[in-house]
Image 1 (cartoon, rainbow, N blue to C red):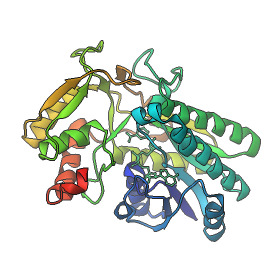
Image 2: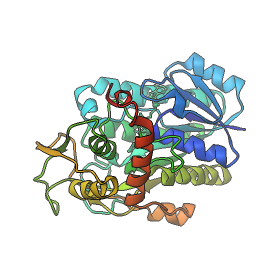
Image 3: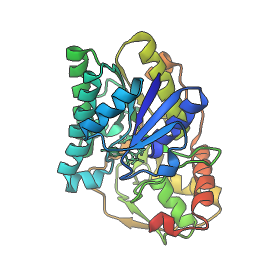
Length: 331
Ligand SMILES: NC(=O)c1ccc[n+]([C@@H]2O[C@H](COP(=O)([O-])OP(=O)(O)OC[C@H]3O[C@@H](n4cnc5c(N)ncnc54)[C@H](O)[C@@H]3O)[C@@H](O)[C@H]2O)c1
């Protein structure tokens, strides 16, 4: 039996693929490479293709014995979702429907979905648990929430079982430095900070210093990508063993302001990082910190990596990958 990893050439999907492979699972990655990297799909089989193409999906499901689908393929930039909502609803919602309908046609019943803390919008309390109201404040968050609702409806109507994972901020890299965080364009804080440390970018823009937080900058919860991978493995095993659909928030339970991240990054890289304060960005909540108590209780999962580990592993991968070819990074 094979696990289909959709979007497995991207940041989080490639780390999940690596862990599943090391744990003895057979995997097949499909990815259209619009935002991923072929060299990150290093384990199992790889086939290039788009999940919006139902004939392609029929071919995948008829020629492989797929037991579970893990779905990482989406566009995930808040700002871009505000300026181009149509692109986001098409890629994240319409194409996910095409994928789910192919699963129903081919009687594949287990689905793991990458959702997001963006489904919660502004925090009414922290840490945010699974019972927190979901009121997204940007189209990206809505695309994820709509898919969550579709999954509930598909479970009732077609018996499709799901595990929904709502990540807070994924961070860090494979400690063996085979893969890491490489978005293009990059908008995530830690890789941007490391670009500045490496001299690839001159400075980092900090959006807003007047939030109602201890130092005025936004607070986020950073969870190591290898911890996320472990949660996916456990969540998939739980789903296949019990056949019970469920949802889990995956965060570390601890928030850091942008200034605190900068401080830790300067300590680890031993480089000074120039910042530039700019206005708040539309669609950014002040504070997002997640509770993982449910994942701990049900999946026996506890994050193993600290923020320092995230920045250290990210820095080691960044140096290996971009030190001699900085144009790869911003080209
Ligand atoms: N990175 C984070 O901090 C974070 C936080 C919360 C949720 N998420 C969610 O996790 C998932 C993975 O995020 P990531 O950071 O690894 O993103 P990523 O961009 O690195 O990976 C997404 C992959 O999906 C592929 N893809 C996109 N549309 C596709 C399509 N129509 N057909 C086939 N392949 C397609 C891309 O080429 C890319 O390889 C996304 O769904 C994202 O919304 C990420």
